[in-house]
Structure formats: C-alpha cells, structure tokens
Image (spheres, rainbow, N blue to C red):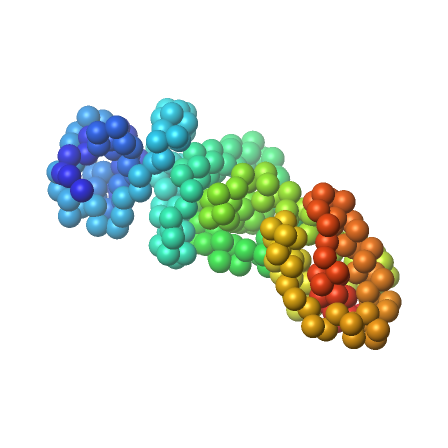
Length: 275
C-alpha cells in the first residue's frame, strides 16, 4: 500500500474515511483521527494499526451520501462494529453493510429518541440460526451505548445480526428477514399440527430451527442429503412422516421448489423428537 490517504471525513479519534486515488477507505487505528480535518493527508502508515477497509467501487456513491447524511459518531461506531465482525469471523463482509448498517443504527437512534419501540418477533430464530452474528451484535449494542450514550432496545441485536449475516452471504437484509420469517412460520405450523404447547426455547426447538435453516438452503440449491433411514422412517413413523409431508408441501409452495423425500424423512425425525 502507498503512503498517501487524503481524509474525506474524520469520524472519531480512531476512525477516518479517506481517499487514495479513486478508492475510498475506512481506516481504523488508535488516534488516527485525532486533530485531523478534511483534506489532511495521512502518511503515518503505522497509525493504521488495526485495519483498513476498502469500499466497493459500486457502493462509493451511496457511501458518499451516507457521509453527508449521518453524524460522524454514528458512522464511527457502525464502522467499529463492522471491523469487529470481520475480525471475529475472520472474513470480509460485503461492502453494502457500510451503507446499510450505518443507516439502520441512525434510524434506530432516531426512533428511540422519539419514544417509538420497534418489536422484533424473530429474536429467538435469529439467535439460533445465526449465533455468531448474534453474539457480535450483542457486543455492538454495548459499543453503541459506550460510544453514543444511547441505549437501544434488545430487539436491535436481532436486526444488527441480520445485517451482519446478509453481508456474509451477499444477500439483501430483506431476503434474510424473509428466510427468518419463513422458518418462524414453519415452526408455528408444526406446533399447531402437533397440538402441543412446546417451550419455544427448548433444545428440541433449537435443533429444529437449525435443521430447517440448512434444509431450506439445500432445497434452494437442489442438493438433497442422502437419507439411508428413509424406508424405516416411512414404516415406523407414519404419523410424523404425514405431518412432515404437510409441512414440506407448505415449504415447496413458499419456495416454488420441489422438496425431496429425503428432506421429508429428516423433518419427520425432528418432529418425532418434539413429540
């Protein structure tokens, strides 16, 4: 990397947004933004101690708009959360999170200030489906409180986790939310068909949610798992298999994809556990 970064905007003492050539970078390092202003040049390479993140050229214009519209301290904490997520996960996140997460946190803070509480009905599903993202989001909420002195509601852990997950798999947040909603609908339907009022947070329920997440991925990709137990499941778990068939018809209708019988068999085993 060359030496010259021209500052577009210092966000905090530890985070600045800079330009080098045609590219925009988020630079993180202790004291990197201290006393700096727009147009200053960063030449001390050692200051960029933690990491630098290059904004995808396709997101540059959106990011410039975010720089104009969102307060520096909100952007700074958003970038710190993203850097923490990349460090914990050991992978780069899709660049759209730099726009989406800052925008979301900004909006969440405005809602809190106006006394509007947003409920997240998918908290448990998100926690089970995306446990790493959920833990990072918990730390993110603490960071927001520490840096901005704003206490966001717990429901925001789920929303921030969805932003992180979406950036991992390069998917729109709305798509990730749709998947989460589908899994909640499926588990509600299973409980209804079984006529049991199961503890939603039981180990069996967690296993079912986790299974459904990967099962739906396989159905979408058209890559079923081999199921050597299928003949005995059909023979010995007739009731469970029937319920699993009904659930898989619903999944098929929602995804517009055929659900292989192997997946029906695996779901029947999970239903057996629940009973």
